[in-house]
Image (cartoon, rainbow, N blue to C red; front, side, top):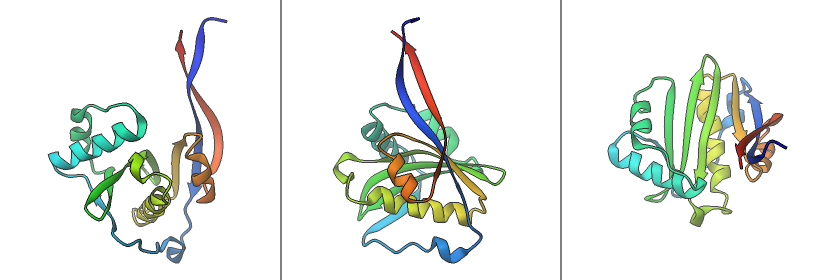
Length: 161
């Protein structure tokens, strides 16, 4: 009634990590690799993926400032030599937040998000995380649920009309 409308709806989700190392063995996918973003060229590729996957841009300077943070990992997935997916891991104590998981449009619907998330979960386990948290869009939520994430609550962002 005050001219506000919902522009974004996400579900807060979490996954409690097991201490069983065997649970996080990921079956390799031919040509699929993950690398940490380290160089200026990496940042440009990563930002292009985010822009294409989410339809908005992030300032380059923001990512440049995060590269050397010890509690952050900025990741990019490759299929062969093509950069195709993005993610940020942010660790606070033994909780790891996963952010900006996006896949380039040409690679969506082909299982790359699932493969990438399995690798991310394994990386969180190696990084000695206890729990993983994220905010899922309606399109991402089914994948996260299949991977064992549990919904906690709904997050709505509003904008005045």
